[in-house]
Each structure stands twice: as structure tokens, then as C-alpha cells.
Amino acid sequence: MDELRGAARAAADLATGHLAGVPDGPVWQPVPEEDRAWLTGQALPTKGRTLSGLLHDVRERVLPHPMGNGHPRFFGWVNSPPSPAGVLVAPLAAAMNPSCAGGDHAGVLLERTAVRWLAELAGYPHPPGGGLLTGGASLATVIALAAARQRAIGEQGGDVREEGLYGRPPLVVYVSQEGHSCLRKAAELLGLGSRYVRTVPVGRDFRMDTEALRRAIAKDRVAGLRPFFVAASAGTVNTGAVDPLDEIAGIAREHGLWFHIDGAYGALGVLDEGAGPRYAGLARADSLALDPHKWLGVPVDCGCVLFRDPAAPRAAFSLVPSYLRDDSADGLGWFSEYGPEQTRPFRGLRVWSTIAHLGREGVTRLVRRTCGLARTLAAAVEADGDFELLAPVVTSVVAFRYRPAGTGADGTDRLNELIPAAVQRRGQVFLTGTRLSGTAALRACILNPATTEADLEILLDEIRNCAREMAV
Image 1 (cartoon, rainbow, N blue to C red):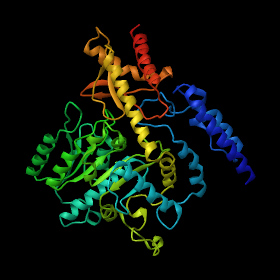
Image 2: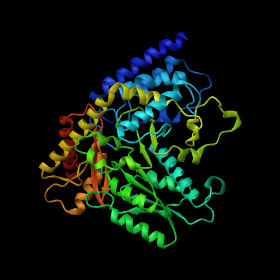
Image 3: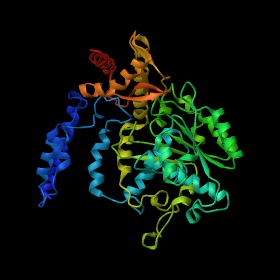
Image 4: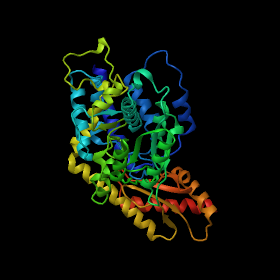
């Protein structure tokens, strides 16, 4: 135990030293071949290592090569820096090491509070038992779609758990053109088939076209298919767009569809004064997926799925063998009855500590600050003749491109395809790209509370510098 105590103190110093040094180092750099060989090619040791020896290797070989998402100038994908409170309690959750499948212990009880807090922040109704933490929004989506599938088959007088999907009209899923790929993966995993995942077009603002949704539903009904699930986005990855949630909720109710919202990244955007009105209708969804490990910065992994009716996921997943029966459990049963995971980690401690540390005011301040910086970046893009804004800025994502005067369409497209990797290699900024309406685009997602307006200026300067170097 003395060895563990000493190593734990050293690990705490190592972690805090690493975090303190992140802003002054490169955002990201390629891993040198020597370290790459060590990281991937180690032989299985015959004898065990000391704890201090392990920490030495972590300090020398692991910490110098981060993904980059802790840095204030990391604008790639949707990856946040870790919350200090989450970092603080992560070793304590590991020290307790419970399974949060169920039972009467702190891990289970605290998760109920963490889930309720997330629902309150997003403005989503939360009946007791109406949600659980997951490994991420991808698994949350699988859980929601499975619950919807169980309900749809039940309405036809069947039981998908017992009978499967055999001999029934195909169930159809509707997803926006800007919807996340996890929705298609979930449909494939659950046996629905990507052939029956309809991609609904978006308008010029990259929001789902509700009239196109109506037409697609009508066409499938005429063809003898069974429309049953529509997924809207509350903050897309590409542009941060929020679909017309209230309209989609009305269409779902009119046609008897399960209404799901993918708010993995953007659900908390409802706290921003400018974006808030766009979230009207969020509370009408049958299910909502969100990722505390995105905007909130809860250390990975941590997703969440919320339900208006907790009976739906329980009907889809509850299976309690005799060796897991707990007669002392309350009427909510075990968390493992609401999803596919049996042994579940103590995610609730990291969520609880992060939200408790920030409070509602701190979470709101974080969301509003990062959305405000996104609007600042968008204004700078529009004010510069060499840049072009490609989508309205709704949350904290800015989609744009570099388009210097005299560059043709093909040249502009190729240039914007090359810029992200070139910017990343320079180590001053981390930027990623995408495609919007067939056009190569740059996208900056702002999630770090330490990001400043000066960092945004460096971002645009680095793009210019890389473009000039590639033109030489």
C-alpha cells in the first residue's frame, strides 16, 4: 500500500503538470518513429513492472503525444478538454471499481442524480428511471432505436425479442442528410437494414426539409412499408445546425413515428440566448441522446440517453436471470434492464462532479462563451475577402473555406481539402475538414473554455500561411 500511495501522489503531480503545460506546447505533432515502435510493438513482459517504472514510461512515451484536444487551439471534430473536476474524481471511481448495473450502492444512486441533472440542463422531461449513462451517443442511439423497434412491432401484435423481424413489412428510419453516421450504424446493427434508412434532404441552412420528410413517409406507406422512426439533430457535427424540432415532432405524432433527437454535441446549445429558440420542440421527443463528454468536458467515455417513457427501453432490454435478481431493488429495477450493458462503469461520478463543480450558471456560461466565440470567428471570416462562410452559425461550430481571389472552383476545392492536414502538421492549431453540398469545407468547433479571440486570429493566420506554402 505504501508503494501505491507514493505512486498515486506522483501520478497526481504528473497529471497536473501535464495539464498545466498543454497551452504552451504544440497542439499536435506526429509521433516519432521510435515512440511509435514502442507504443505498438512491445513484447508481453515476463515479469511485472513497478508502479514507478510504469509512471516513467507514461511520462516519457505517452503524455508527450496527446490527441491535442486539451489545447485552447484545438478546433477539430467535437472533442473537448477534460473538466478539472472529472480528472480529479476519475481515480476515485477506479478505486471503488463498482459495477453500476444495479444494486444499492453509491454508483447507482449517484447516476440517477447525474442523469436527472442532464435532463434539467437540456430542458427535457425526466420521469424517474427515464435515462441512463452510456459509453457515448452511438450506444445511446442503439438503445433508443431498439426501444422504438420494440414498440413498433408490439403495435403490430408481435414481439421482436421473441420473433425477430421475420415476415414483417420493413421498418423505415428517416434521418437528415446532415445526420450523424451512428444512426445508420444503429439501423444496420439492429437488423433494420441501411436500405430502409431514408436520407431526408436539407435546406440551404442545412436543416431537415420537413416537406421532403412528409413526401418520403407518404411514398413508403404507399409501397407497403412501415415508417416508424425519425431522427432530428440538435446541433449537427458539420455546421451545428438545429433541425426544426417542433415541426418534426408534429409530423411524428401525426404518423405514429417515434421521434428521436440526436443532441450528442449540441443539446446544451439550448442554454445559449441566441440559439435557445431553435430548440422549441425538444421536450416533445420520445428519446434524446447527448454526450456529457463533449460540451461539458466529462472525461471520456460518457454518453446519455433520455426517455419520455422509461417503460419503452425496459421492454426492449430487461432480462433478469436468477443470479442477478435483487428483491430489495426499487420499482425502477437495475440500469442493466434499460440497455445492453451488464457490467457498467462508474460514469456517474465524473458527470456529477463536473456539473456540481460548474453549477447551472457555469454550464450556461461555458455554452454562451463558446457560442459567442463561434460568432466572432464567423464575423472575422465574413469580413475577410479571402474567406467564405458556408453555413449559418447556430451553436459553436463554424463551417467556412479559404477562397483567395483569382482561385477557380477546382483549385479552391483542392486547396481546402489539403489545408487541414497542413495546419495540423505545423502544430500551432488543429483544424479538420468536411464536405458541405459537395464542396470541401473547413470546420472549427469551439468547446474549450480557455480559447480566446487571439486563438481565433492564429487559426485564420495559420490557414493563410499553409495556403501560401502550398502555392509555392
